Length: 380
Ligand SMILES: [Zn+2]
Ligand SMILES: [Zn+2]
View 1 (cartoon, rainbow, N blue to C red):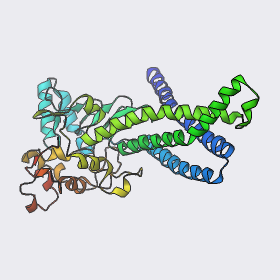
View 2 (view 1 turned 90 degrees about the horizontal axis):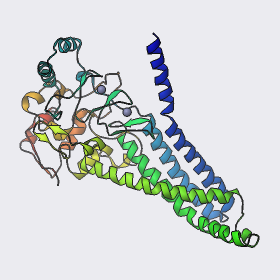
View 3 (view 1 turned 45 degrees about the horizontal axis):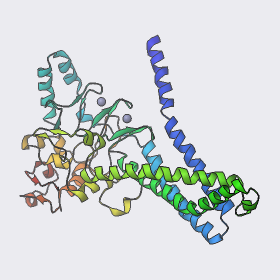
View 4 (view 1 turned 90 degrees about the vertical axis):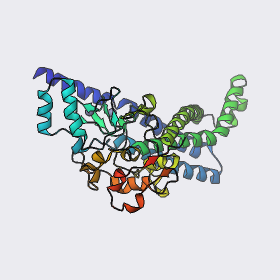
């Protein structure tokens, strides 16, 4: 009992420690709110119109930024569907086999009924020992969360959460709004920063004379530090956002950018790409009004991806999974996104100029998307 007790205490302590970076960000944001609203706008700006406009715009950006941050932190990452988990009998069967090749044989038989296209580097079925499941495409086991995460991008300590299929859009919006937040503060704070800076510099030499330019109070410290911190954060956020925009355009996760996914036909770094606009829609959805709002609007179910599905052979695509259209339930009982695989993925698959569709017109039923022998022409 003792070792497991101390292990759970250690885990509990770890869980608390993981919140420190989030707390750090929350404190900086809270201070920036106080410094901008009270010290800059209310204390230092004299023009009423300027004050009101700054406060209005600031609060709109602030609310969107906090909302996106909240969603990134508290949206639980999605785990593979029940059908990817080993059944009790399969588990027993796998345990009985001690040779790797015969275990692979069992896994290959199970994988036949699942929409899985990716393999390990050695060409084996991707299996998670820890979760006892066949990993869906783009799914990886996170050692911090100790779970398999659908379309895992990375584990982010600043949000104490895994960034993956469920919250990647929120993460992107969090980056975009925090950059906007920092740029807005930098731009509007600039003239007051210069005034205080000059007043401070001259005051150093002729102390009393220049103190009257602006109230030489604690506001000065807040305004100077606000400018420094907002401009510094802007630079790092801009580079991170640019990188993730590039990833979205290429339909790659951070993990896939580091190591290209391996398919049955070999390694292909563009294996999931559907072309620029469809790659974007896969993350942000196809309704423009939802793009800037931190609510889930992405397409697909996170377990299978259209670029892959169309390459499945007929035998595999005609599986029970391939034709299950709605109400997917995760292993922990949670319902999957409102847009089921077939509806959203068929929208991704149709109406694209970059596809060569042979006989899609005759195939009206939903399971068709995965059964079609279509050729994908990846946009360069
Ligand atoms: Zn796992
Ligand atoms: Zn994680």
